[in-house]
Image (tube, rainbow, N blue to C red; front, side):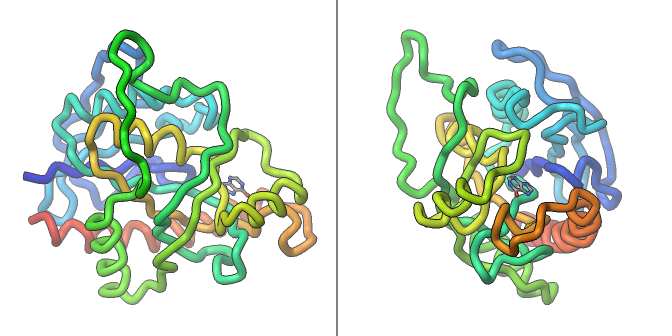
Length: 245
Ligand code: HPA
């Protein structure tokens, strides 16, 4: 039995087509989650929705309590997560408003509470392939079915934020093999793995990453691009629900 959660990022803190059945606040050993969990139905499927940055978007990427969020989702019996993330595009094929389903990640974040295994319970988990293969396949299929182009492979560089990167940092990320850059991909993905929750990301390109097209990054354009991008994501996710009904 699959129970799916959607974690909404910047530009997706609510979901109109979601029929809300209940709202739940969950206590965890790690403190408070970003926001109450919305339990509802999307396209006939029971889903859980969490606004990663809080309902009013008040939590910066490094202030998000990723452990509480993931722990609470596990308590809600969630076994699959689709994480929606706004990102900057580094590769030529990932310009603004593109959608990508990353298959790899590189972690550049620091000083975040990034593991459940740091007391007397040390475990090393395999993380060779951070994103779940079947969830990725379903996301790609869903996008194809609603005629939305998706880039089917990408390496997500997770940076600390909340500032955007320098042009030199983006050159370094590109040399490392990153094709897009965002601030919330880690430790969310690895905490999900530690809890044995399947996890995939649907990334929306909000802007060209720093220095890629030589302009400075315009925050208004990011907002406009995200409105268009998140509309695509909503369509993909509604279609995605068909696979679990
Ligand atoms: N860098 C990091 N995170 C982001 C960006 C970016 O350019 N755009 C949206 N999220």
